[in-house]
Image 1: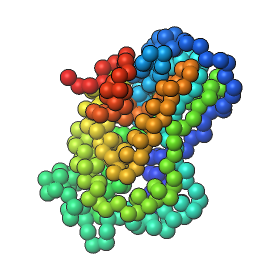
Image 2: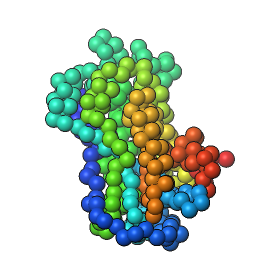
Image 3: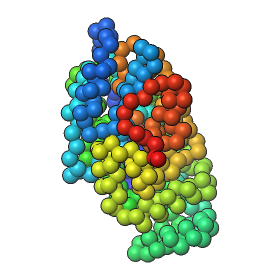
Length: 315
């Protein structure tokens, strides 16, 4: 595994995207009903969250939309242009020093500890299934780090395409930039934290990732397309039970025991603050973060908020 491939994998996982321009807004008025009607005209899961005179709009987004999948972002774009502010996922702040250190410690990130293979860490049943999935790929995968092996399984065997078609976050960012709506990332992860995490996490931490990624690989690439079709049709429980989506939630960064809770905590804090702000906040957040058991929607409902939108819990 080359160093350039490692850096490419990191770039796909944590993308730094500048926020749209921020300008002064007119005094906010209560127009959330109009905005939510607009947003629901799009092919994306949208929820209105309210309590008394406080309201917020949540848009569930997934990364990885097939390029040939037709979905309509028009309503979402119109709603974004009417919002007072927009919230985006966290960004990564990576410095040249972080990149240099990552290259310098590349073997720690790309390879399992010297003298070991995947069989030394995985349950024998999972290892046997992994052997079957990787049968045509030689032997170098046996010593590949589980961080990269998980990416390999999802990309090359489960059909996942991170750099694919335009998704809900892309549509919201473009519309907010064009309308000059205030936008901000809800937080950031420092590059040195990312590098430390990748260098120091023991392979055992990634066992759930590899098990889920093997299941996604066995299910085949059709689930990549099905996941996106369920998303645009607002079939949220189906997305949540899709083998590929489960694997994405179990692998880095969301499945990491250090980075994952940090990302979730940033979202929960940002949304709690946003719902207290005047006017209308539109937040585009990872669908799994919103709809997972004990996730954002469950938490808001438990706090007494009314939630109107597609059902997110499986029966």
